[in-house]
Amino acid sequence: MIIKRFDRQEELDQYAAHLITNIVREKEQPVLGLATGSTPVGIYKAIIEEASRTRLSFGHVTTYNLDEYVGLAPNHEQSYSYYMNEHLFRHLDFQPGKTHLPDGLAADPEAECKRYDEMLANHPLDVQLLGVGHNGHIGFNEPDAELHGGTHVVRLKEETRTANARFFDRAEEVPEFAFTMGVGSILKSKMIILVARGADKADIIKKALQGPITTACPASLLQTHANVIVLLDAEAGRELSEDGTRIQMVHS
Ligand code: F6R
Picture (tube, rainbow, N blue to C red):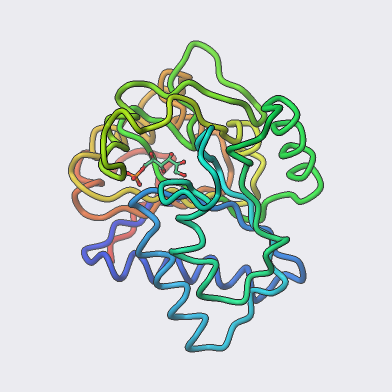
């Protein structure tokens, strides 16, 4: 695991963007695992800037998002489908048929999970971009006694609904359920980029990266992956000790 701490948000964003655009440049059929939330917004902006500046095409890129709210249509402003179009897809030459999110309106959620897992099995992820919840969730894999390997429907914890209420007009509008890729699928990605910003993420970053590996903190399972790069701002990284043997700390 490599951990990089950045003093400036723009540097973090450009670094993460560059890791992703390198894959897009190098691979014939790149497959990107993408995330939503506040954390990746600047990274998507940096990808758009770099791709526009270097005339990099995304026409050959396939994407899979981590999650989607159950019950929200793709054109609902708080759906993750809408978010991805606004923040990334519509700005570059992504092919509509190649960008995938679980269908929040699927009539048969179980069949939808199976469909998503089959697509993932046929298109192994080259990279998975991740944020982390305050309770250690990755995707919407919430802390629990057991975690799921594959795509499933999860009842969101109240703390997650509260954290995400800032995107909705009223807290009650935050859906109770979401589709999420499982931890097994996330860990199958060839490379994982975990990003966290802000003092409010410092405790969970410490637990996830230097605490015990436990389903009570799903992000701690990333310690078992051979190719994880963690990008933090100074606040999110402030609780980490630099003497962990599994960690290479780089300051920018
Ligand atoms: C989003 C996702 C979530 C977020 C996490 C952090 O697709 O899967 O795990 O990454 O909730 O959210 P922010 O970035 O808003 O702090």
